[in-house]
Image (cartoon, rainbow, N blue to C red; front, side):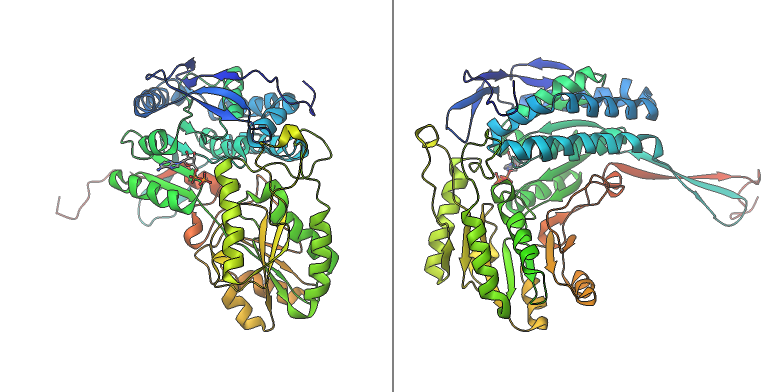
Length: 501
Ligand code: ADP
């Protein structure tokens, strides 16, 4: 299969991956996932529900208490490293499948998604042997040390925007730290993760260490989040569902980490390099069809550069090549689903009703016959937006950005922070003092200065406010997947004298 080719037109078939085996759902049910570029069925997939989640959690528990606990940190690291190499060797096939299932352009799946998956497994492979406890200088004839132990069985629920990469962000630190996992992919994009299951087997992970249970959120997802047999739940997705997960986990006091929505301010000051800022605005909102939780969906523009910036931004947005995602020259593919497309169109109506201007885009592009049923939308810019409008406050999750102008820096900070979210922010300026001042003042987990949408497996990512809790990637991710045990040892050999001898 070449990188530019879509996988075969006949639907593929996938089963659940539980306890090291590919099995049908207990109910025998299946669901289909379409190719968002054509609307045709890409695959038929076994549909997990509560019974399958129970089976998977039991398998993960057996593995956690059995074979997996006897495997050395070095061997865990070696398996993760082998997995990274297996994924790398299948880059073209996995990228083609990711594009077919999600709709993202092949140049993104092949050169960003899959290489980042490789990077994450490789990075955390190195951590397996470096998870250490500490010795604490306590007073008296006492020795106190800590053990950093795995949390146990982890439920992981992931979204559809970076299917395999979101799986890697969650699996890699969990496995490095010695946990076992039950992972539920999004119903829109289960395919590459089930392909990954085959590579997980090949890499030598014992049965039950990783279980993959595709299914719907309200059934499989809800059953996993509320399961008494899991020790931790990690979720990436909408803030709305994140709250449901936190509620479900609260009943069992299951540990939770959440990576949720965003409405990132991308701030352009008058002294910015305008060409650089325009390219950053493009990267901020049009990358991955705008289906990015940290997308720069609120552009704050200094009034003095408004015309110059908007003219260039519009001209470049209109030049984006939208269409066949399997074509190497395509820069934007379809949205992931019909629901997402309808949601985006709805926000175009809302923008107009609220008094904003549809400055560029605003509808689906005209494409050749084969893609008439695809979920495509044009790169879209709303101007004359006020920060209080719905289009500036609600996460649209599409290639749609709102431009808000500003005059005064203090009010800008207030507006930038006037959102329930706090995932990321961009700042464009040549003034180093202002750049760092803003980096401190903006309430967000990730700040990009004169750049946008930069990630690395070694650098922490996560949100402030309703964008969630916990940090994925980097050493911080290990905090989510380990717990600390404090061990006290008497060195005096004498009885404790407190109540007399
Ligand atoms: P989006 O709205 O972008 O599709 P969601 O937050 O709904 O994002 O979905 C992210 C993940 O959460 C998916 O795997 C989905 O199946 C799952 N999910 C949706 N609803 C629930 C729920 N009530 N409980 C648990 N998981 C859910």
